[in-house]
Image: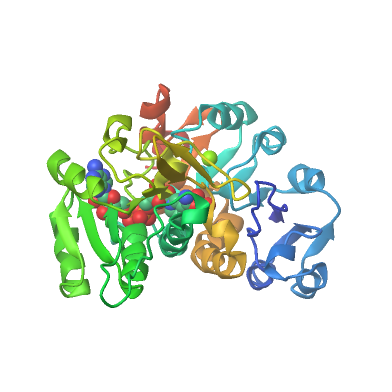
Length: 372
Ligand SMILES: NC(=O)C1=CN([C@@H]2O[C@H](COP(=O)(O)OP(=O)(O)OC[C@H]3O[C@@H](n4cnc5c(N)ncnc54)[C@H](O)[C@@H]3O)[C@@H](O)[C@H]2O)C=CC1
Ligand SMILES: CC(=O)C(=O)O
Ligand SMILES: [Mg+2]
């Protein structure tokens, strides 16, 4: 198969869909790999590194989209990209379609077969292609929150860990999955007072064990959520219902009960955000203020640390990517975890939560791919 990887074009997105190490693996499987010139600049991998790994360097993204049987990316295609996709081509990348009707329309019109990293599953019920970026974003959320809390940046002016004789800041993490765990680790490491809310009791038990009493775990009722959020200096939004639009857990009304200058980091913004007042921001202008509360809602947080993120992402995407390149649609038909990743195929929506969020009829991937 001919596999192509364009340079990412989202605002301050420096990751790359294929690292030179990944290219070498595809080439070892007998595939031809096209890389857009400069695609790896953000991770310090120049065209020479890709050529040494066996890639062919091409001058434009146009050539990648025209000539590739499979396009491997990081972020959801931007309008100019989805217009270049076509029937018979596989797209392998993050999509986050539930909150994105325009992109969904574009992918459906193209006829492309689109596998979304964030809905591929594993035997343990996890989301293995989302997890590494959730690890990064969870850790970054505390760095971003700590920076926004500084007075000169509009925040309350409180240090997360406090100092001897002065109380630390209160950090509230809503959703104790991968993002939540890694955010809590960083916040605990800095000495903050940390609470984690979740709707899963088994998960709260696990977190309680892991942190050995160093965090407060709370079952997420409306009461508990209000009490925690009203007392918080920093709130991290980290809930997920896989594939679906995020539930709005903090309403605009609640902001008036919060401390002025508190910061809310909505990591779940890529699924539409879990605060009513969230809207996606970029690394160029990451924060804005509503009713005295600072919001940070960057939808591609890991793009800020591409050297870490691109390698972590490629570690997780490589095996399914090779399977797609080796066996094409058969790989999807034969692997139920990859089938869970199929969001759009030949003009049909194949993901139930996406179809429900956007009002499409869902087509079972099994019926479209002739799975027995
Ligand atoms: N902005 C960015 O750059 C990035 C965003 N993300 C996003 O972060 C979000 C979280 O991802 P993960 O931690 O990997 O998901 P996860 O599935 O590991 O964890 C989500 C947690 O939310 C909990 N939850 C669901 N509904 C809830 C509710 N109503 N109240 C309280 N808890 C609830 C679940 O029980 C689960 O423990 C996703 O939307 C993901 O796409 C991930 C990476 C980068
Ligand atoms: C998961 C995601 O949206 C990201 O890594 O940018
Ligand atoms: Mg998006």
